[in-house]
Image 1 (cartoon, rainbow, N blue to C red):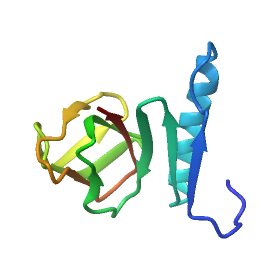
Image 2: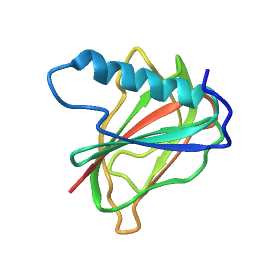
Image 3: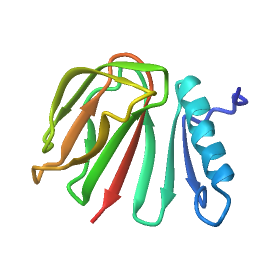
Image 4: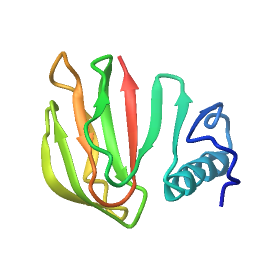
Length: 129
């Protein structure tokens, strides 16, 4: 559990890299813990931006400067996942943390793509061009 200090979004740099995959996994688990507290975080690694989307989050913009993006369930199940403005749209889909159904999508419009989730916590991984 995170201490209540009045923050609602965390920006984390240097969370990945090096030869310690265990530290990278720990930082992804920390992202899930932040999501469970209904807070958000952004992790930066080279040309990738990782963030969590919490239940009820609607129309999260994936900007067009990100060519690829992937969605993964941080919680056991994410329901009501919708993607628009992408090569592979989804409507009211279910993603499970046991299968990578949301792997490797592409922004297909100059306005960007949009993601929403009704139930659960998603991990969004965006890759800059």
